[in-house]
Amino acid sequence: MIKMTRRHVLATGLATTGVFALPSIVRSQSLGDAQTTTVMRNISSFISQDWRDHFGALGVVTILADTQSRALHYWNSDGTDYRVYPTSVPKTDELTKRGYTKVVRKKVGPDWTPTPSMVKRFPDWKYMPPGPDNPLGTHAMYLSWPAYLIHGTHDTRKIGRRSSDGCIGLFNEKIAELFAITPVGSQVKII
Image 1 (cartoon, rainbow, N blue to C red):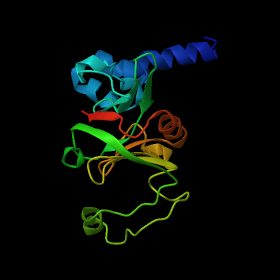
Image 2: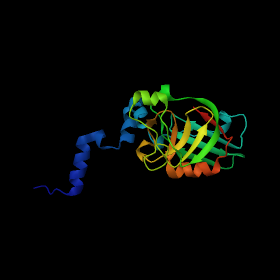
Image 3: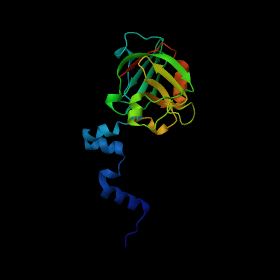
Image 4: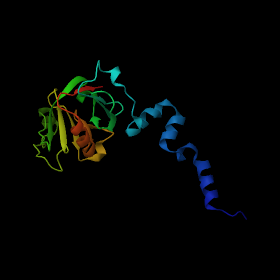
């Protein structure tokens, strides 16, 4: 009679289930490139960036929002302070505006008004004052492009996902940090 231990059962189970018992990141790497792209959807897929690849010089502050890796990169005026923040990004490429812009206004406790295109798609969406249900979270930095912002969110499930209607979203505590160190006039690029 064979004595079955937990270790024996676990080893037998892993041997019979094969590759499917491995974590998804390992499976995707072992199964080829087709699945690797599906894993690159959260914070673990950050791509390192260098400001020199995107800007001729550092400004007061330089921000690069990378919609592919869903990360916002921050450099201070002399490049000695570099930070990376996980973000939410626009749901579709049609909603994504790319290029150079700048921070033109900042607001603690922003209110929210849906754009005409949002109201067309979601007729029940209405103006929302600051508060826990406001989709802009606790802080907002308005860009020179109308209706495009870098803002917080109360819905933490959105970070690391395609979930916005065009804006770049951060956890509320991270937008508060970024807000404090980013002056109006900071240069921004969205890629």
